[in-house]
Length: 633
Image 1 (cartoon, helix red, strand yellow):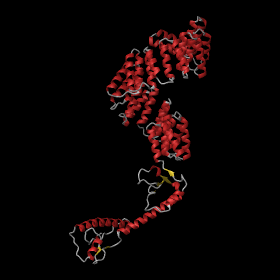
Image 2: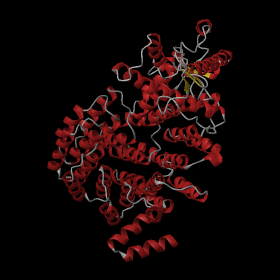
Image 3: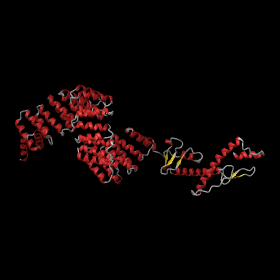
Image 4: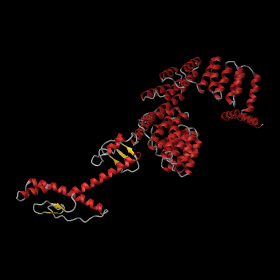
């Protein structure tokens, strides 16, 4: 612009008017352009000199920042060196050559590139990206640099030659799992493979394994494991952790240990915690505690989740001393303020019968959530302190915490243990309805049990009818035992027929209630029918079922069948011996009763233990001495 202006002035043979507004505007534009040109030249010169700073030539032009120039009358003003236009042209030509090389590399082996066209968020996001080299990217709309033959080659390329990126797919899978939508996660994973042609990677398998663990789908998880082995991702530590967790949560501890052992030195606290918690869940508390000791021996640091598993294992087997040792380690490692660790401590002490220590830990917790309160309430219920449990529930409400289904189940059990707290039970029932927990099967069963034990079968029947059908066997058992407690044996037999029509199979607890109902109303034929079902379902070996069968046959007048059931029992307990003895006595079979009594004293040592315990409770030292002499002899 400046050159054009000066040329026009030279042609008109008139001096330059430096005071004109147009000239000032031109000068401002020139200032900006020259400054940009100077900076570009500095960058180019520095790049050519290998990063060394070149000595800058002093300016001698109109402006202190302009490049040197020569004014020769009406000739053009020419800067020394290369012009800005020339530098830009050379840079763009180099860029064009680089892009062309990338396209040739792309078409030589498309399998090494990701196709991002389906997931582009904006124009700056590349269409193709190399799988291993981060700075190798290509844009289809780069018309200045792309060769003309690119579009032709892309059109001739076979579909699916370039693999689509799994980033967006993996993001969807992770979001579904985080939201608890496990079934939709598995459905989406299958759909992406079949319809989109997705080849899963390690980031795809982790959320899918977590979904299998959430749904307890062991067979599906094994299929995913086989797919992982085919893809060569089995050695990835994140996938191994997810596999251990999936197998542990599905109850397949052998498979979990097999994957765990293959990890070797790569086993971290995540894998150890998954295995420990899996053993605790499967009722193998001693194995979980042994793993904790092994974990410490291998030098793996214990975290909060590890201590939660240790405390749950101690609570399962009532290992109070080991729980106290774990508590000392928790204090030493600074995890006592963790709300989950604190809740587990309260639960462990409560289940081990040490309510004072549980209360001490509970009071020292800086933050108490609903889990902490539930542990304390359940501890009082377990130790027979129903009234104290109801008081804890009232204190929980005063702190403004929202009760959960576990809370209502615990408080309803407290009302059932008190047996005369039917009004409190009705109040808890109203609270459960307000919080939307009445539809929970556990809460419903606890409501039936509470009303039945408090003698209000009308309320129990009302709750039972509102529950979703088909009813669970636990709900049926609660109703049967409730009517049996109220001495309504005929109603129990009616319920058994309704239960059969609904297609629900009885369990050992249900059979005990049904057999006791038959015994109370002397329904021998119904008892024989239930005996056939017991044999078909393989419940005859259960001690409680066997004792109930003996009692039912004896009370219904069939002492021969009672004796046959008793003789088939592999190891009858004190209850079985006593029931059979009562049967002989009821039917006036004194000789058989005496022989049975002698056999009981000779074979069942638990009888002596029971008698000695009774002597200790009642303080009968003389009887205890006689029993001891009999045992020694």
